[in-house]
Length: 125
Image (cartoon, rainbow, N blue to C red):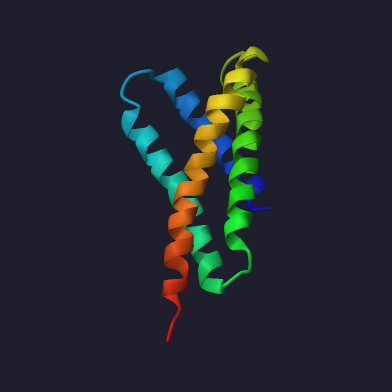
């Protein structure tokens, strides 16, 4: 479930950024940085809650979630850009499934790892 939800969130964010870049190609670096920070924050907070709750095997769960989110957001992002932004075709799927999926997987996995480290320390005494 984590991977599917994060795939949809990452794809929606990528399509939104692409849509805004298409309307105004200059001056979008701040928006991109904010979106990346928000996406990393979602994974970190969700993983911290998992760590705080003490879910078993949460590290492996987040590795699988990162892989599913990477591939899912790549496919959904290409579809979303084709429908809402421009006429992106199947030719964009190759680069999205390699570089884009790997970047998204790391954008989920690294903050989730930090969240898993911090989460158990948030337990109330």
